Image (cartoon, rainbow, N blue to C red; front, side, top):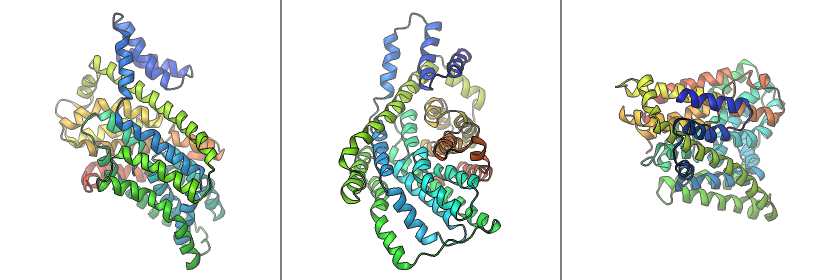
Length: 423
């Protein structure tokens, strides 16, 4: 049954159907083949079940807030602030890029949004101080991985929904802080060493009065992650409430205070958010139907028994999970991979003694890594479209970053407290 299902989905993909069509039509066809008397209302019910989770309210609201910030000047204010303090050191602009991607990730929750918002202005700055274009693009693409780790992460929200009840989105958000900072620290060290080896020219030092000016301009954007993370951590509001507050905060900043966006533009931004959200929700609904069909055929049990055995250790489970998600996200959108594979591996991981919050961090990390890894990582094609550069040039300098991220992935597997210590 599984082979037939996958064959149908691959054929639909080869016929250039968007991913949502194979994800929904494949399970419907397979059920009609193997159980023609099945009530179709049952399948429709599963589609609706996939999108009725209250936690999914976070998705459109966080995307809306990120769209507003991206349309305004928030990313430039963050870049100016970070660059004013570290831009003059060796590798300072590369460090600025990594830091800005991490901070903007705490606003957008999306790797692709971070590539667009930070990549456009930062690539030009990196080229001006002597970086090769391929090196600049590789740094931007891989630094954006932090956006899926630091809160508010769209990937974590989808994982919490796919893993089932008992997984707190708030705990996942907090657990992602240290892994996200580890990515930033690794890229910072690499950037300084790379700049010394390649003898990258130093940028002009910014005076202290100008530094304070940039700091003053960036205080309100920097308040965004503080309010969201601090509010959730201290228990003042839930992640869903935090997503609503993020929209209000974004509108106040960009429309009322900075005046970078006129009121009349908000509806068009909302429309863009609605289009993105509808695509995400269709994938989520299709993922639920796909998962239900797999469960109906007892395929998850067969896969876990074949791959994991009958009594796997926690570390072995995490290694297998990492491989599956890393490879899967190299070829398919991370949301789809999380929706399909999480229900398969989460029960086995929990049975092996793996904390589901720790599992969520491992899955989210591997999803972020896979999305920036050839051959088909979604961030690579996003960068290729944004920078108008050929595929091979975009990926030429990515290997060092992938190696660093793989090392961090091993550390997260071996030391669960890196993810759980703040909870």
